[in-house]
Length: 176
Image (cartoon, rainbow, N blue to C red; front, side, top):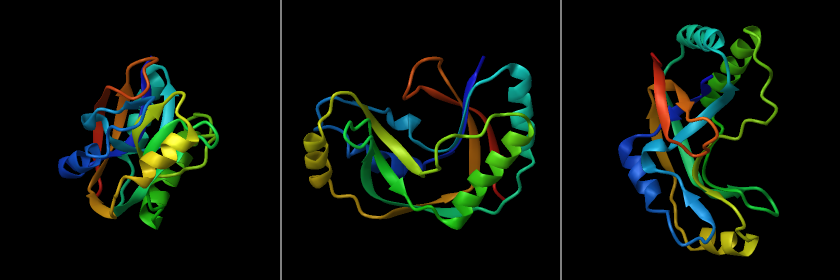
């Protein structure tokens, strides 16, 4: 069963710039630069027939390219930090693309995504990192706003039971 999700790839130059944020945080497992992406919708482990249905509905999405803005670093996990992220503005085109995918996936029988869509790029996953260490890390990293043009979105697969990659682009769908 493939483990699938949809997302936006980052331009190589932006990914390399984000890679400069790596290091200096005990307990962080840094994501490989080639695996940076902005997740739109986690699909999960599905059978090949459902994967074909996902591909079919994704190919039917027709939207124009749009600009995505990354606006700083943050973390997820509250009292127990679990991820360092580059936060993305929830611009209308980005949110609408994600919402359309959610609607289409529900129509083909996938369960609804239980988590609220918070656009971001995961830079590291963490275990046993303290809030203090994360606050210090974030306080010492300068990250100015960066923008990129989303000209396509992708269907990705991930190796079973391995978070953080490697990821494979199974299909790419142009925004035109």
